[in-house]
Image (cartoon, rainbow, N blue to C red; front, top):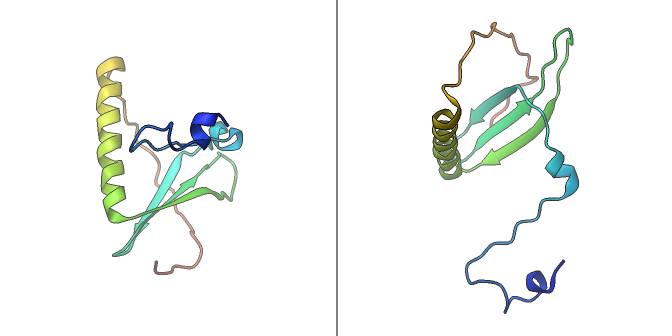
Length: 108
């Protein structure tokens, strides 16, 4: 780490330092997101489903407050709009209905 990160006097007021380690920076591929919610939280499970594989695992779970879920929705919409302005419309293709067995149901 640099001295700037270790010395609060040198950091800009209100600035948040965010660290991205190598493992997280690699990312996780997902082609399915399952979203559930309760009165206090949204739970987004990211899954990678591969053809011919009878079982898939949740690769990552993100838990958000309703307020953060709404901010994420707005941020994604803004980014999709900017992407489409730069690269053209994103085409949506019909997906086959995939029956999901998500284990026992519970309440968050």
